[in-house]
Length: 421
Ligand code: GDP
Ligand code: IMO
Ligand code: MG
Image 1 (cartoon, rainbow, N blue to C red):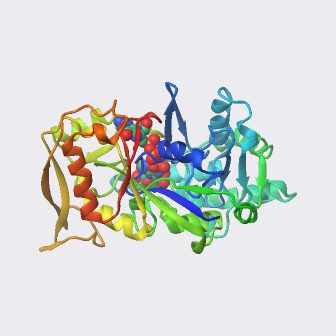
Image 2 (cartoon, rainbow, N blue to C red):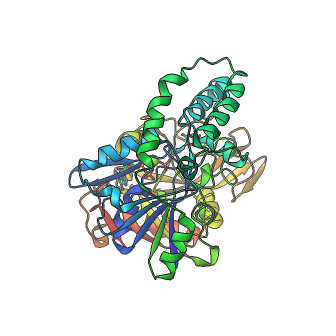
């Protein structure tokens, strides 16, 4: 059986967690393929809101197995806290969660290095979530990393110490105070806790499950414009957030991939630093932030808001091979007289309709078209037939511009506020 992929097409926080939860009943396995606790995936149902960081968003469905794939980086302390918060709701969740032995561990010194690196960058900082993501992936590609599977070996403590020594040498290059001892005991305890979970050679396990006809949904974190290759480098995360990352982050071959679900907000948000062509600094931007409750699920930072950017969306559809689009937070646009949509850019004197190498504001300026908005509150809609005409027009307008169907429209944070088309 083939696997489907679900991922974000913008700068993260598109609503991936919500939709994975909605789709889970169609799958046997939900597998996270990259990122780590920099992610914050929000799920709402039965009046309760859950925010997941490392754990796949299928975890609330009793009949489904969840896998943390080899492409993910895990902070044992955050993982343990996350599990403990979930155990209040269901004490059996640990039985349906598997962890890849090849997933890399975020050490306390990775977090310290992240903070030291950001502090040293001053105004040029990435706006990292400070969870140690960059330094951990650097050690992975630098071939120094410590993986979950290493903790099962007698050489574990020695490998840990060797890596920490390297980190201390690096930290001596920064003017940065830290107290490692304070963090270490909690970390070691949390590693022991992780070891009580089912650790698996996940790529082998996945191959067996697929051969047995099981259906897999690969869950992405972050978004396409934060991809280390295709995003707004260097203001990106350190993993491949795009569909190719699902292959490397789980060990599923490209010819075993089927649908690619691309999730996008009906407008755009970004948290952290970096260019954002359609960013709004006016009343409309404030309105989007307020109505959309745009505050980061992991760091609580306000999210920057702006109009939908079609060239960026087309780019994301292209690099991921998106087959089906899902439009989130349509309800947040209710009340605008007109909506602006960026359809091309003025780039170094020319008009272009693709996303160029650099999108910094001194090089690029968005060109907008205007479309009529709608006033109706959408949060109570249960069927597409209840949509106001101008929302239907907005959907059709986007589909025509990008050439991929929008198969789902989300009109609120709750599981039930989801309309299939
Ligand atoms: P993720 O990282 O892609 O899973 O997204 P986040 O959870 O970080 O951010 C999405 C936010 O929007 C969360 O607070 C969700 O509860 C909320 N949300 C998701 N879909 C909708 C929607 O259609 N309308 C509204 N108003 N909120 C939504
Ligand atoms: P989810 O999965 C939004 C951003 C950070 C920063 C940059 C690098 O919830 O969509 P990092 O900590 O990875 O070194 O930060 O990436 N970022 C996210 N923005 N949603 C996320 O995840 C993000 N994960 C990282 O704000 O700009
Ligand atoms: Mg998020």
